[in-house]
Length: 304
Image (cartoon, rainbow, N blue to C red; front, side):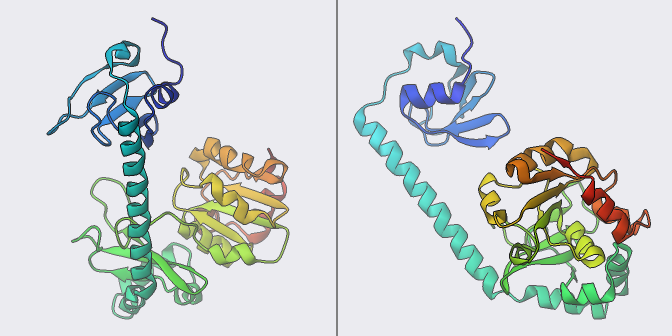
């Protein structure tokens, strides 16, 4: 048989289920055989697998071999749709509850106070390019044991917007297996750092990759900017938040040019990609860059 060009559309249109993306090329949803929720995994290559477990069939194979799968009844379709809506609502309620906890949290102030007794932590922030005034204004801090990675010390960056705390980003001091950053509480939604700059005056704004870069660029240039929590984390629906700006400059790390162009394209003719050959904070802290030098890269940014 011919290979199936769009496995997700094939499953959703033929069997009436809805699949959600769980990784770059993997989707999951109710099994078309046994109905097990979120057990049926489909890959873009066209293969599938129902993860084994109580009441689950554990079948695997290729989608073009699914001819013998029973068609769901209208009652089953309705049951699956209701279960999907209930899961989405439960996830929304959980995230709202976690955010409300963060709004009431004052841990970032305690972490900032830790700098009074930890000279090494102050030295870290200074070495990262932050001035004493920036360390104070941003309430940067130090945590002896990261709440979501206990036993590991971390340097802390509060994520604020409109005076409310939304997260505390923990930069693990000595991560064991990569993954340098951890959230303060598990399950917090992704958001933009320095979001108050979305209200800044002026016709341009920068999108940077990472909180430290945003802090250093703000300190050294005064340019309005926001930062993602990684090169893959800018959500298309966020583009509307930048509608008031005439130009949007994307300045990701040198190894993320493709992601930078993908993000810039969300803004059409207003999108620009900066060709900075080092990380934005390293430009100032390790390459002795100046604000005027950085502005040269802004002026020569490529439109998309």
